[in-house]
Amino acid sequence: MKRLILFAMLLCMICIGVSAHDIEVANADGVTIYYNYSTNGTELMVTYRGRDYDSYKNEYSGVVVIPEEVTYEDKVFKVTSIEEYAFYGCTALTSVTIPNSVTSIGNAAFTGCFALTSIEIPNSVKSIGQNAFGSCKALTSVTIGNSVMSIGYGAFYECSSLKKVIVKDLVAWYGIEFKSIYSNPLYNSGHLYCDDDTEITELVIPEGISSIGEYAFDGCSGLTNITIPNSVTRIGNNAFSGCSGLTSIEIPNSVTSLGDDAFGSCTALTSVEIPNSVTTMGWGVFKNCTSLTYASVGLGIKVVSPETFYECHSLKKVVLPLTLTNINGAAFYYCEDLQEIICMAVSVPNCYNSFKGVDFNKCKLFCWDYLQSQYQADPTWKNFRNIGIFDSSQLVEPTTDTPEDLNGDGVVDTQDVMKIYKYIQEH
Image 1 (cartoon, rainbow, N blue to C red):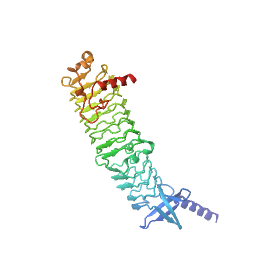
Image 2 (spheres, helix red, strand yellow):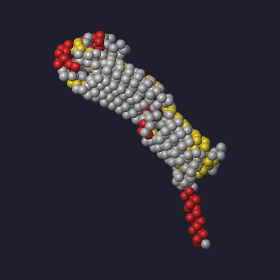
Image 3 (cartoon, helix red, strand yellow):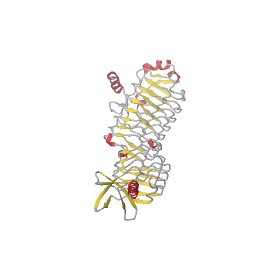
Image 4 (tube, rainbow, N blue to C red):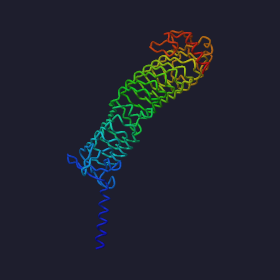
């Protein structure tokens, strides 16, 4: 008798262990979904069947529609989350509908759902866990709602078929609550999903954002228009690198630093004016911008960083500021089409190994009259065969906003020079 009782107890324990989910409820379509209680038993989270996430194989298959509410034992419970590992390894799952009641998707919630082809994450979801959709190899399209503020590392890791990411609110996607646009969550997964099929073509960053982080829009080749507000002070490394559809960019006067390769390989970019507010530029800020023809560097810059205009093959005209003291290595490497450098520096800038590939016979250098002889004697600058004295007409580029026109009278003349001289004294 004792043996029978002990056996019954053990059997009971095994059954409890295997059925560790709190409840299971069948939808109207006959699909059973497993839940655990949350929030002191007042809400439900979708979970796996049994004690462990691998207790059963393919407990979810085919089409699964998660309801917003579940009635169980005459009580109504709201479904508010998808627990970690809930659908882990459900290789026969082809479709899942997530309701607007769900606010979080846990770590590895859908990892290994090989047959899942698309997913729409509703506006209610605020966080997506690490590796949430990892190895969903058939996943081709993801729509992300406008409340997502946190995406875990590798959320879409090894989603090798993913070609389209539709972001309903791009600012929310990058974490506006921190007053910063952070790194591309998809980039962190080891893949770049800002490709030619991406829905992102126009980006308007609202006031209040103070920085654009590293790799924020790296590889967004479909992006053609960007509006950056006056609240942004920093543009991080590779923030817009590889945005090959971008033809123009207006950097506001609030920006003080540009990171390494911030606009590298923006191959359609044709002109750029670095405002006076920028005091720091990283390596290769405009590296490989092969369509760039005109560049103007503002008064905040004392040093042109290495590889700033590296391989800008179409660059024809550059205006350098009075504040300039140094041009670092490879800054103008392989700018074969460079025809005009207007250097407004008040003394001859130091430079070494900065102009490899520049045609010194074709490119004209213009400077202040009292510095002409010093340029002609300088070990590097003397390589320019034509060193002349500039006049105001050479400084004016036909744009609506000429950085050198400091007093806003429409021309660049001695009055602007006096403002620059005062600026130098004060700084």
